[in-house]
Image (cartoon, rainbow, N blue to C red; front, side, top):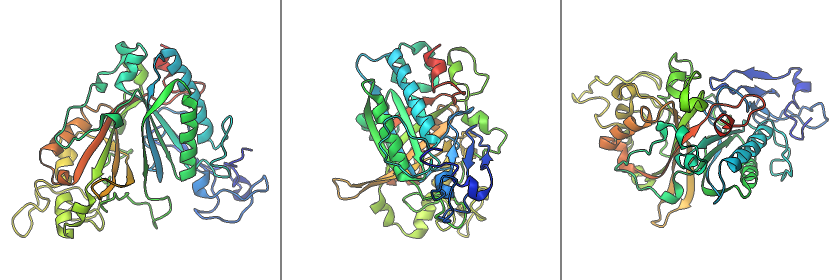
Amino acid sequence: MSRRRILGTVGAAGAAGLVIGAAGGAGISSALSGGGSDTGKVGDDGAPALTTVGSTEVMFHGKHQAGITTPLQSRGHLVAFDLAPGAGRKEAAALLRRWSATAKALMAGKPTTADTGIALDAGPSSLTVTFGFGRTFFDRTGLTARRPPQLDPLPAFSSDVLDPKRSEGDLWVQIGADDALVAFHALRALQKDAGDAARVRWQMNGFNRSAGATARPMTARNLMGQVDGTNNPQQTAPDFDRRIFVPQDATGAQDWMAGGSYAVVRRIRMLLDDWDQLSLDKQEQVIGRRKSDGAPLSGGTETTPLDLNKLGPDGKPAIPSNAHARISAPAQNGGAAMLRRPFSFHDGIAADGTPDAGLLFVCWQADPLRGFVPVQRKLDRGDALSAFLRHESSGLFAAPGGPAEGEYVGQRLLES
């Protein structure tokens, strides 16, 4: 029995836990303790049983890496590393072996070697660790012949004010968990594992609404107060895997990406003081949806499809021509789709006295040149929301498929 007692509720609940098959191939296991609050029950080891939130475990091994289709967690860390001078393919392989072993242990609620005790007594709390390779990683490791064309640099956009020191990177790690200490524990462990092989290039910290904070599961809201993520592709859709993941039967120089996905990462600062000066009606016109429930201005509920042809009483489109919802709709972009999985951020007050806050935008797709790029180009040309956003950093990373039992992440690339 680990110190985190992942199955601490088994004796109390009389079950081995609930296993849920996720579209990402990373199952979610929860040893139920009767809800999201402390039930006062006792586990087999005599200690109090973990709550539902604390006991939820996401599998490390699977067809796809965890943290892509995993439900949004309440705390996240995004961190990019550059390989140290002189480090190459051999050092990168050793690092990924260490990182994979650490991620597997922590995601299972187990301690690591020389554990710091930061998350002592907590369960795995839906911890996920996702790894990706940047374009420069292939230069540093002598693997340029196996670099996918999907990692070609993103085009420049008019709303970009990118800080190169907080952009790109050889390696990228996404950490998510429903407990802040569990997430930070994973971050510290991975940073220590990097040793002399890699150095942190940049780090960003984010959050979402905590699990169980609403009466029922709801689409998250961003720091503008808007329901954010309604139009995400549904995992039940027949073309979901084709749009989000590289085919399992991928061959050739990029066969190592089978089951993988490409992440576009953007730090988007929201000009919240300017936004808050708008009336509620104007905010809804900018977005194209009601703020109260996320329903389109053309009518219905949050999940009602946009009626882009509907006119209002004044004879104008119910959803304005430059509304964010209209311009970003898949129907307006040749069906381009990406799975948005962001975190909000707040890093205090900027030098100009305004909140340094916004969105750590992360989106997943089988090909960013067909997913993110065409949509962002269209938004760049006339989205009403762009006046309230500033894209301050950017990165593009290839996240290989999930490792099989006995494998580490990226092994099929690094040992090919």
